[in-house]
Image (cartoon, rainbow, N blue to C red; front, side):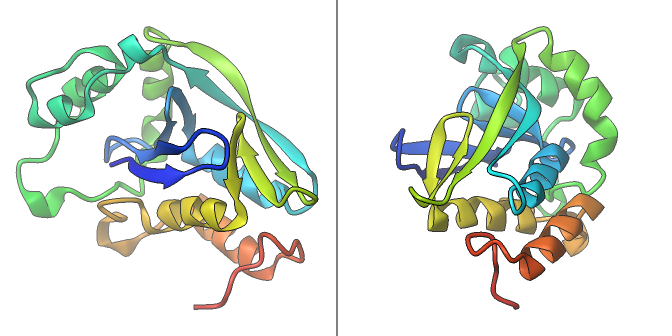
Amino acid sequence: MPLAFPTQSHGTIAFGFFNIELDLLLLEQLFFFADSFCEAVVELSSTPEVKIDGWRVPRGQIGDLHGAIAGVALEGFIGATYRKWPFPRAPEDFKQSPEGVDNQPLAAEMIADFGGPEQLALRWSKDAGLFSIAGFDFSESGFERLLDYVDRGGYPRWRDDIRPDYVERMKSALMTSGHFALRRKQP
């Protein structure tokens, strides 16, 4: 479930997974796959900008997450995902799937009905101390919160505490990175 995160440029925004069977992340009106995001984060340790493929969905086409979870408002892109992958009946089954990457082709096909493709730039400005995702600026600590969210599988967390390989690669790279803003404390 997307959570509220503070930005330096847009106030508080929504960011996160929105369907447990997809590894698609939502950032306000933007959507992008978590594996692309994780790979781009690792690349930021050696370059100031990385571009990833994503989509922009107009607000009226996004849908209602809470209504889709309840099964009563299945309009828009989020509604379409919940028609395909309904919210689990048993609360203990509400866990982010580490196999969500397997559903990327279908998710990409579905989102094309609601929004358009867009190249999203991830940037690191050392002088400003800001990380930017498609113009949404985060402080170092704010960006670290996004990384922690993805690392733990958001809310509700990864099923069986199993992270996808791309999250493990990001986590490992960040722990050993020489890039001061991406260095992370060992657990």
